[in-house]
Image (cartoon, rainbow, N blue to C red; front, side, top):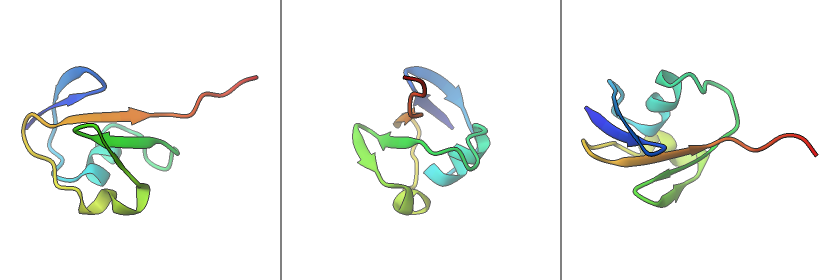
Amino acid sequence: MKLKINGDMHEVASNTLSELLLELGYGDIVVATAVNQAFVPATARHNVTLAPGDSVEVLAPMQGG
């Protein structure tokens, strides 16, 4: 299905937000996520089913000082 991820359209195979993070290569990286502008805590990602056209934001914390 096609999703808008961080502003760009992508074709993905994942059905849930947790599967999508694995598919995108985030694995164990700590990130913040939102679907359709609603924050999704890490503990709820496996319960969020994605639909075609959904907008997903994945934000990694900035490092440095």
